[in-house]
Image (tube, rainbow, N blue to C red; front, side, top):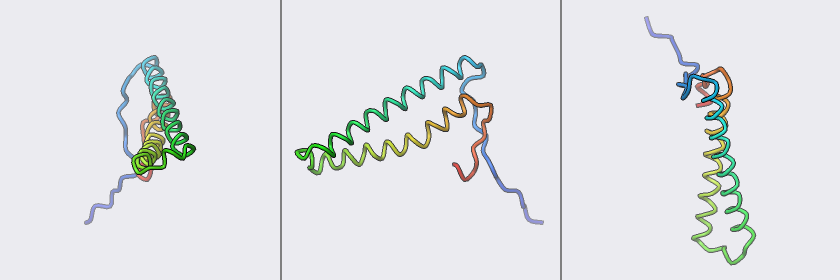
Length: 95
């Protein structure tokens, strides 16, 4: 008889059990997220607008800033939502 069970979601561990610590966790993550958005957006804007910065070093810096924007925009919003909500599950497809 084959095993027909499948995984549909993962359960994440909470960093804090009390509501005050969860709110602190949310605000800290929001600050980190906004700082990363501002910093990487500034780097992207300056490199794209200033024609003197169209050298290979700044090309790779721009790519790194865009990659960082993509990575941080996938993980931190989910962590902030888990800090505010009661759910600790993430779908298998969302992982």
